[in-house]
Length: 91
Image (cartoon, rainbow, N blue to C red; front, side, top):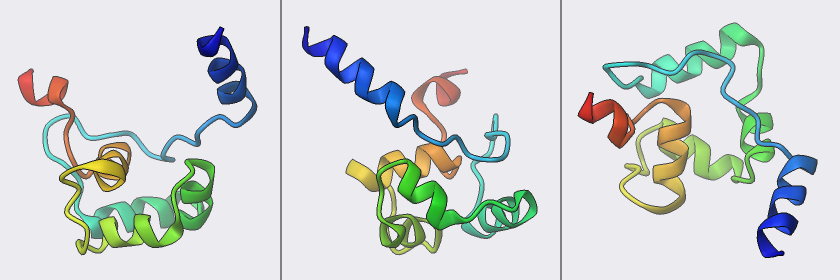
């Protein structure tokens, strides 16, 4: 029953995907992520809010103050393509 409730709530507030393709081999830099958001016309703040992160957290990852080693900063870095997933590294 718990999984049903969590799945229903996830459908009501779906996370916004990044407005650009994720990298295959080499992670994006913070500057590249900013360029890609600018080119798509999507606000980084809007993406942060849609994915339940604070604007501050996302900008700290993009600007390199948060390294993305664990926790929310790790999730943000993966979603933005600034870190490669375990599957990508193994391939």
